[in-house]
Amino acid sequence: MNDDIQRKLQHFFPGELLSAKTLESALANGDILTGKEPILPYLQTALLDEKVLEVQLDGMPMVYFSRLKDDIPRPSGVDGDGETVVTQPESEEGEYLAAMSHLVTLPLEPGLGNLQLRYSRGIILRMFTNTFAVEMATTFEDLAKVDDIPVLRLAFPELARIVRNAREFRAKVPDTLNFALSLQSDDESPEVDTRPVNISIRGLSFAVNKKAQKLFKINTLYSLKLFVEDELLIRIDGTVKYLARIRKRTGIEYICGIEFDLHTKTQAAVIESIVAMVQRAHLKELAEKSHTTGINLIT
Figure (cartoon, helix red, strand yellow):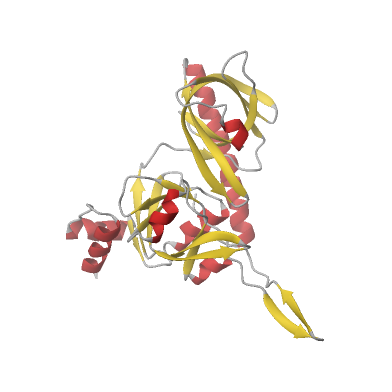
């Protein structure tokens, strides 16, 4: 059996060659997951927490982005009195995942990845938790539509690996937290008000619309003001490090990444306290979703 797992690891993670002893230890420690059931909670979390997934194809370095999409049951028609009545069966969000038959994702961004994905031999979906990343191996099945929205249908993963310390800790900003951000490059430029997507001790990312994203340039310094519950917590400088186009369930969002320019220990301490506060709010939101859905969401 371990030989079969080793072959699959080589297929989906080229260059990852584990000795028999290392593989046995990784399986025992839960660093390599096999079978569908151990992977299910990660996918349920990705859907219900609307996590951005990194997507890699055939072991290539290029990273694409996507999100899971719910797959609602198809409407059914009932004939009565000469008419066909179409009804939508009731279902809970993410209910289809419990069948562990397939996945549905939004199209990839950048869009070029959608063509490459259709002919790829191996697809990796990478999801980040508080302390590690989980990389789930899958393959392309078909193009489809859900609610008239084009989607990608993928096989349900049966192999995944846990990657420790994959990146610095980033706290996701929950919808329940009144967290606002104001940015300005200089006194003569317009001030942009937006909302952070996540924050770490080194920086944050935020979403803007298509028009506003043109105001931001990579490697440009901006003045930032962070507000929570309308209270100004800190003024700080930061440099734009990346701009990305990512699909949401309701359209496209443009994500901008900022790296903080921390001048003092006081500024660093304030940022650390904000990250901790955001994390507490996110954990509370996940706990409430877990209680409502009965699903053990991964933090």
